[in-house]
Length: 324
Image (cartoon, rainbow, N blue to C red):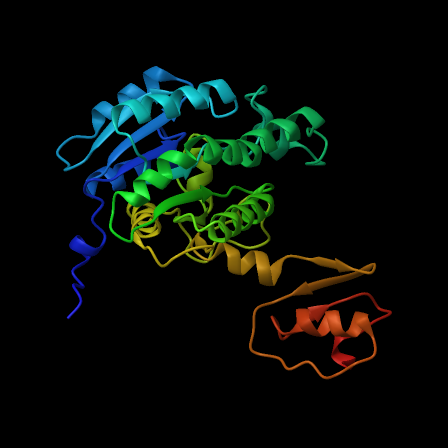
């Protein structure tokens, strides 16, 4: 009989991991979970003092946390990080592309300005968007490229094992990172390289990107940018984040997945957000199943597909979903 003891199945003993942006927030949650399950985990970031403090706080676990100063947007810095790990460990089993932002690297008050603005688009700049995509989407590709040979060695160190890349997806750049994950995973599969690539899509977790006041408000009010409160009515815990990351790191059969750990946020985004199709405005509410009849109208077909997610819809007066 297969060993179904999770302490054995999910053990990361002997594995080497790296978590970018691992000194705070979600990255540190993941790093602690890996170390608690036996892995040696490198955490990277720009602020060495923050990394050293975080690493020193992790005690009494079978694994360890090691700080490395590395700027994920600087190719030379990333190459230096890879060279260091190659010299010390000779392999990498788990790579977590966690470093990311939701606002501006240059303006610490950016998020506050967006929340206070009558028009939330107004504070945006081309530079802000460039910075966000450089860190959240472009950097993960070049990090995977830099550590690819070490990941292959990590997979080869375990009989019929695989190495794991986990991309943590943040708003705005999530779709781009989802597609990048697919491209990377497909490329590895076509070349017979035993590296799995998955997406971890977090909801609201305590971090430097979210204020304590906002974490309290989400219990009863919609999170900024959403139209309804989070179904779970609370933030996620480090245990919930950690167990998800450990699963993605340990499961050799999970590849190309987008795993949401968001308290139901994805349900709100799919079933409650307004959608514009050919100039028509739709708003859907969650309900039961719906079977779409055949139609010669593309607008009617699209409306019906939206209607499957809800028993009530609001559209422009010129077109009634109820007529479908």
